[in-house]
Image (cartoon, rainbow, N blue to C red; front, side, top):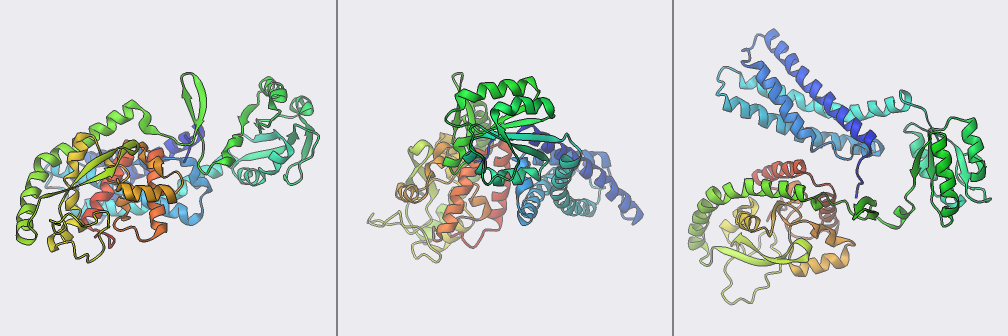
Length: 474
């Protein structure tokens, strides 16, 4: 899982955000100019719409510029894909704000065609900006910033193991001058000049201006680290201490502090913060209470009528699922299958396309997720959240835990009515192991990178999935 971004990446993310705001604001006035030149109906309240568009982008960019530094090292195709995904979300929120303002002000004089023109042209502008701005920053970082002359110090074997890292960072503005070893052994494969043992470090730092010193801890580090760090402080060198434990784990280690002591964790957990949990709970209630008050009663009446006609039996289907920290709870759904009066049917068997157990209205309910609406009851009770990893049956949970390492990390947060996998169309029967793995990876990413803006993005995506359900919905 990703670690917290450093100050450099945070700064670039802020500059990226400011660039987008400037582009969107001035492009609005460019569209107004073109509209006037084409002699189309003029827009009313132009400043209102320009500022509202900027407000929508401000909200959107807080959820789409996470882990900014990782963008630099991705392949070209992955950068394009990520840029398009960001632009989709950003344009959607700008459109929501702009048309919300249009209807709120009852502005009948402004051409809706102009607003559509502005938004449709913003989309490619945002794609290009999201793709090009990080590359521009990378170029500026390499040629316009301080010359980051660096030296590395550690055991010969440790230095040899960092060859690829050295090559990659050499392309990102670092200038590696050489390597010192903590023993007399000379590194064999590292592509840097060997400068000798650490006993010569003081003399070297006095002769050359070095920006930073990268330390690779080893089993004898208590002998030389105090000496090296004192020399770094004396000569004004920035010190980076390499995390040698990271090679033992698939996920990145996260720095945490508990009771005044410093530790590494295998998982970043934003929802460990009481404030974040409070914000998430408020968002849950803000959506679930209106849904329970207005949508649920109407759906209950309609579903019950069709159940009486097509498949008499109970209105609700209740089933035990696994939730936060492995705790079991009863999930609520509208019954979409033919009622099994004998009670012998295996309820753990997943529904398949054209499943004979599902009556005709039930298929429509499942396809458009109407059967999930009663889960707002679970949200109100606190068993579930509006957004989170989907809860599975205990039988499935056991199988996933057996087959997928670190599966239970997804249970660090409450399960959700919708989740990061479901909003991307990954729903329905577990048939393809690669898709199951993709679902679980998306859940892991959600746990480690939660923000309220991520929840908003998932809800917006889910609305699109409900309106235009994928083929996997059954």
